[in-house]
Length: 518
Image (cartoon, rainbow, N blue to C red; front, side, top):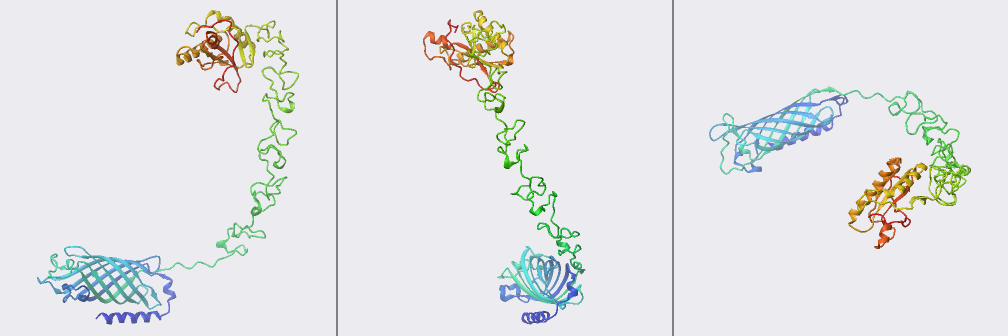
């Protein structure tokens, strides 16, 4: 029974392959198919050796719905099959099988005769005591009646694992068919006819032939400027478009290395379409600029085009106007020589012009008759040196009255020299006692001196206090005289730039004339 069915299908397929394709049908879409199968078959005893196959001829009906994928012959389908066995159970019940499957179908159109198809499905068999998995595969041909209707023969093979559990009485399932010594699996075949109903829709019309509205040889679909001819200078980056000159400098953009910036009056010979650069925007073009990344500013160097004039001594007077380019003006500029310090023969920070004692180092004073003359203080070497020590109460930070004259001299010197903007008052102790206690004592004593000076008219913003304890002795040693020298207060002049920096080590002070209090 199986061999005649297979020979019949093969003959029909050979006939269909000789048919010419139908152009009209190819222009119509068939997105879905509803198919009915009706046939008969048997289980295959030789395949699975199951006693359930004895006299188990069945009538089978199937319904399937298929959806074509991407307008191709490939489709996915969902189906349900019902089989009724002609043999009754040992109890006299009618036996049946329901099979639910899903799978794939391949059904190419052969000319306008019909479709050769093959499918494969997997699913589950019902309604026995368990749900039994199974699969089936089919082959057939459907003759075209109309675009939406076709019919033809088919053949199908299937296999169900634990098939006995899926075969059940139709009127009262379960129990299942009772067979002694039977294999649990069931294989089967059936053949018959199919009737298919297809959804039909017209395919979209073919696109119109390409046009070239601007007649520049580039078809409109590919032409980025469909209404503007490319001309004699087509843009290689924009097909069908003329080359642009965005900056209107006469150099077309494809050749212009600076398409958004015009070359101007000074085009760069090394970069077509670009202006000669002026990196620092000082008006001197880079090829002539000796300081390409530094603008010349308001004071250009006449000897180095494009460079600012220097200030080697950082005194605010540019070198080409500075008569002392390596010597800063200091606190007192010489009005007769730009960039030079005012003459100060005795180096006491009081210019000779106002120094009442120009050859003897002294201290600034508001009294013209004493200005620059020797006294209790001396401005020298970045310090306000005191010729007498500052005395404190023993182990305390209280300034003794005996030190008021020297502190008054310091205050007078600061008041007479407002150009001294920052002074660091620094306290030091000897090495007797605890290190931490000495450090704290030196800090408190320096702060007490600052308090005394601010109380006598000196702006607090000009003064800072720092204590160093015993860490910076003037002279190392443990004798009483050496320790007396190391107990001291120093006044260090600080530049504006260093006003916020930590205090540097102080230079040695002159030996005190009296031993300060510890």
